[in-house]
Length: 231
Image 1 (spheres, rainbow, N blue to C red):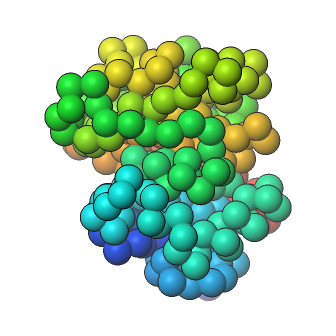
Image 2 (image 1 turned 60 degrees about the horizontal axis):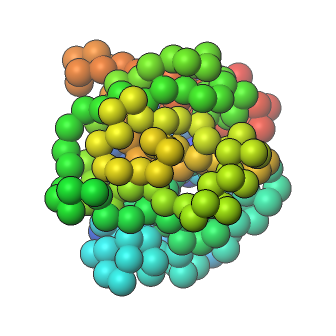
């Protein structure tokens, strides 16, 4: 009999690029990835949800601005409101911000150029479903590939985010001009998180780094707990 594995939904929007990479990465860490098309109005029985990277709807208007209206996003909002873990990477982060599930917005890079390289981020919080296998101060080497990855919040919102301890990752080299070096933030409850770097492209040292596995394995574990399935 096949052993049950934590099930995680990976949502595909028109223009998604990293959905299959994310499915592969989660599978390599013991999860069962469940592909979900953006037009679905309900989520399957899963323990977590991932919005992967790419260029949803061609990044027209603003990155993620159209994808936020996809039917599946209502289900994602309900899942998050019920305490489910929701992760957005790169374009997924942009969609979560546009949908109001995360604070701030993502603006064009300071250089006004597309950036594709490795970067180093520092773990600020280890008490989230996404960082349980980390410790504060850990340095993770992950790749980035984006043109609009500079997280921005006005002074009032930034002060609120900092006061609520919602910054999960900060860049050590700030490649895109993000305010306060922010690479990833979570909601107040800590169960929704977005980050611009790509952990799914760094789960095996053969790919250049295995640091992304710390993030995704944490998510797999959280999904297992929600479903009552050992990770």
